[in-house]
Image 1 (cartoon, rainbow, N blue to C red):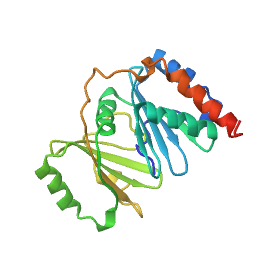
Image 2 (cartoon, one colour):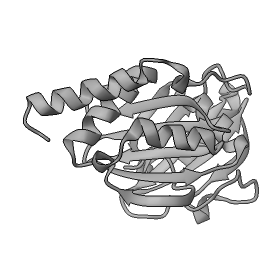
Image 3 (cartoon, one colour):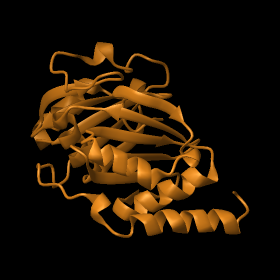
Length: 222
């Protein structure tokens, strides 16, 4: 599955193992990029989230691990050099980036629920009753849609190919009707404001990349 819908595509299907990733991230920084980088492997995903050139969040999810910040960046570097991952770069609006940043700082409350067995009306009632801030993530294969809530009330949708939060969309435009569609429920955490730090400010970024390169050499992967 894809953790996020595809935004407005800048580049897709890149082999990140052939890219000097620290240099590429610096170029996005100097270009004040707002959006995200999606690293997709067979059973693992990595997300690097940018807001006006600042690398504000990093997330890596594998079968048995969920890493954030520099731990996530280190694993993304390692997996990229090892091979088997593909990179896509997607532009988003600042509003969407703020919402996604909140999700990465939050929790996954429920994961992998088969949508056909869920009473959506009851679920939405619970969201309202619990005043949930976060989203429902609906997905099938590599297609994904997010339905955002703030204090229990729906505020918009993010679908594949979108760049901004769509307030007029509905589930009929999402992947909910596809076979084998599943649902995750995610809560938002703290830190959705404009004053996000920049992970690229760390002087250790180059060291993380070099460590991943050295590991690949030791294991005979380069």
